[in-house]
Length: 174
Image (tube, rainbow, N blue to C red; front, side, top):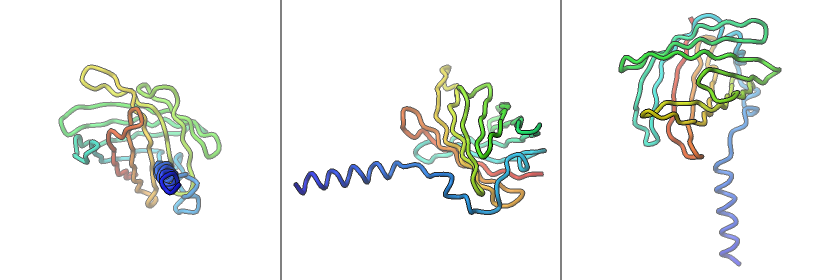
């Protein structure tokens, strides 16, 4: 009986350890993160990708040229990696209340986002070329507004439910 109870407690602890943070927990945090206001104009970013061991594998800068037409935003991202590679991604975001839908050429289907307080969470699947193959990576993207010019971003990448690595970014609005 004690053994079965211990197993039940461990199972519940394991499940709650995997529970995701609800963006609503940030509802009262200030300043409020208004994506259309922040991502309007030019935003600069500095970031890195760390593999699952924590090793920094890639560093990069990004310039985002952003504009909104009503509830539709275009974020034109220009990446430059430390090894000289350049990459471009154009996001189309559509605001629907406190929720957003996002698409880009290398995003599989449509991403789903929600904003609350100073936080924004966007989940999507990224088609990522790796060694001549394309891997579909699950992306859990969190942004936190620190002040009117600064946003910190942390993205967890997973494949088949296993963490592959993390992207960390700092954004600064011009």
